[in-house]
Image (cartoon, rainbow, N blue to C red; front, top):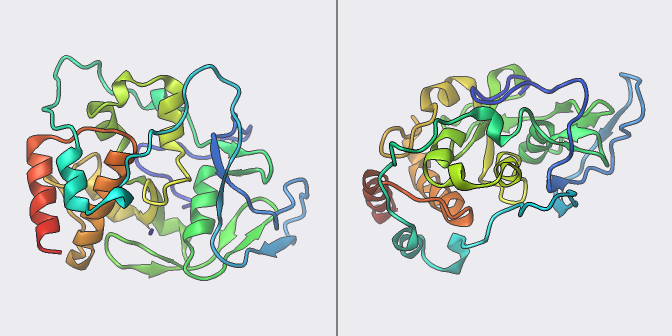
Length: 247
C-alpha cells in the first residue's frame, strides 16, 4: 500500500533526530554520514522491516491478532465493540511522540522510510534520506513523482486510535503505533487532499473517493485494529461488515 508534506496530525522532521522507533526498516545503501548532495544510492526492491531495540521498561508494540489468522469477516467478529467513552481524557497528539522516530543505522526517519518502501519503482535515496521514486495514492489512485502532494497518513488515525484504546496505553506503546513499520497497512503515502478530507474519520464516516479501493480499505482497517487490539464502534463495525460482504 500506499511527503515532504506531513500528515495533518504529524509534525515535520526535526533537525535533531529523536530516539529511534522499535521497528525501523534497514536501508544499507544510504551513507548517513556523508553530507554531499550529489551522493545518491538506489534501493533495489521494497524496504524490509527489522527490529531494533529501545531502552525502556514499558511494553512497546502490538499483540498480533491480525487477519492472517482467518477470513477477515471472522476477525471483525472478534473485535471489541464499544461506544466512545465521553469520559476519556482529550486526545493529545504529543502523547504519540512529538515527531517521527529515526533509525540510527540509516539516519532516516519513519516518513522517509515509508516513502522509500512504498515507491512503485525502485527508489533512489540520497545521503540525506530524500527519496526519488513514483507513488500511487491508495485513496484516489493518483500516480505521482512529486513528494509535495503526498502526506503520510496514519491509516487508523491517531485520534481514532486514542478513542478506541490507545488512551490507556503507555506513551512508548503509542509512539510505537505512530511509527509502526512492521505492518505496512499502518502508515500509507497518499495525496494531501484525501488525507485532509479523511481527517480522523472511521469508515462509517469517510471512505476513499476511489470506490475500487473500498474492499482493500476495509480489510486493512480491520487488520490494523486487530493487530493493535483497538475497538470499533457499532456503526463502524456495521459499515465494515457491509463493505466486506460485497468483496
